[in-house]
Image (cartoon, rainbow, N blue to C red; front, side):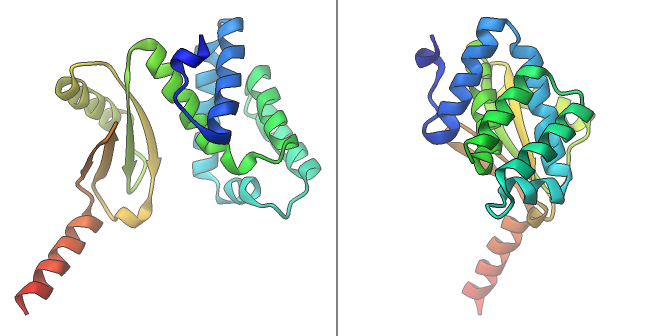
Length: 186
């Protein structure tokens, strides 16, 4: 079953596929997806957590203890905690965000949704997210799952990627285009 759904490759794809199959067997896709969304938010909101996850210097035991305490305090489900534990023991935390994205994509594919990667300069409010999903649904003609992330370097606006199509309305890109146009004039 997972081979039909899985199109993610590499380390992230393999781990996400394993989690997807476990969640399917346990009929807990929604709970795992909610846990992964909260975990991704925590990583995005905490520079210290992001640094700890990316650091090869911190021992696997220290990472496991720290993440275990954080996930327990955040009331993350047992399956997701165990998954993160395996990822930690195997020294694959550097790919955790990619694993979360791959899991979301598999779940969206199973539900018949299209996944849109959206990067914004600051976190989108619930109202903005709902309006974005509505607009994308009208344009694409299908339900849309949004994989949102934040990049302060954009300065403003959005970058939306659906499949091979990308719409870049970020202020940073517009300034670059203006800069190039000005060089051509002079």
